Image (cartoon, rainbow over all chains, first blue to last red; front, side, top):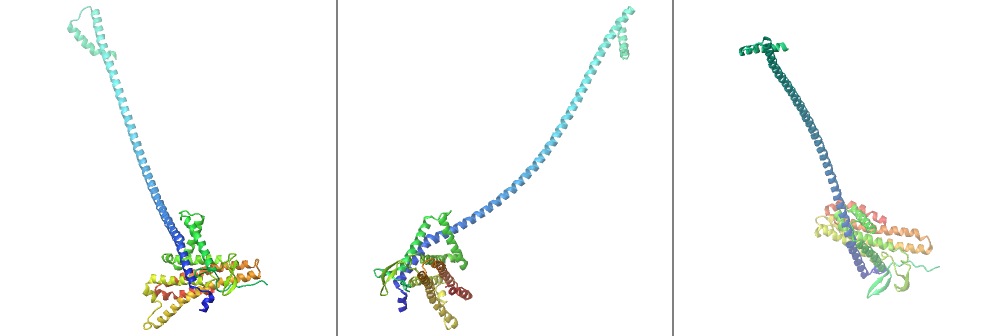
Length: 168
Length: 272
């Protein structure tokens, strides 16, 4: 006991100091350790979540990029096909138009030829009629007689046979 | 030659509140508490923002560094979180008090008073841990906390089984149990006098050096005392942490880690 007095040990002080320590532990725990550790944990958690999210987003972006490239390729291929078809159709149409045009042209030429030939034939037969008339008149005058109708018919028939040969 | 006084072993009573003695070391304890409460108040005032300011950032770094350091010893975040308030408070409280003990005015501002029947110049401030009452209090808290955590983690009978083994079942184990029990009590004494001895010796050292050569010479010793103050706070908290960790480890694991115990305990006398 003498040692205890020599060291100045006093139960009241001892208990006071224990209480002091517990108060300090309580105050620091309540105002510093607990909130700060919670804050740090929350922050760690949030950063981890954010990093995960960023990774996910990056993956999604990559996926989207792949899809985009794939789509572009498809569109390219379709465009090429479409262009090809269009070209073919255009060529077809061109060929058709050309063919029809040449056909029509041939038809027109044919018709023209026909009408020219018809005109010539008509003119020729008219000329034949008139020439025959003239010849009959002249012949009547030269012979100073009138032909009976039977004669006329006969002469006209023979003339009709000969005139074309004469005209040629 | 000037009058030279080494500080007495026992702290000096300056006044009484009723029958309760107010000693100079208790005043220092209150001052240290005031400093810590002020810090706590300023931390509270930061409102624990998600984006910390400078002060909050500093506190965060300190708390995180301390926590990670303790966690590197416990190796279990959940357990570290449970032990942290006691162990960190021991470290912070002792560190604050030890460093405040080196401030100018501590030990040198005196009033006349009676101590052990003599009228003396009594220092108003004296380093908190240069008083056995204070170190003993914290040692008791440390050892009691170890027992509480041990009972909490293992259950009462399992924890008591560490100390009380039926001698007819395992005579050697029974003897070892008794030794363990004595060791638990010895911890209080070793904790108390390690810290008290270091801080008291530092105080005496500074008084003697200041007496011999008041200018410049004490400066390196003050640096030394800063270091000792830090190391003692660290040793106290780390030993507490290690004892708590060992106390919460089960019986089977305990024997396996008894070598680790020896290696943990061994460096501590060297550090003192």
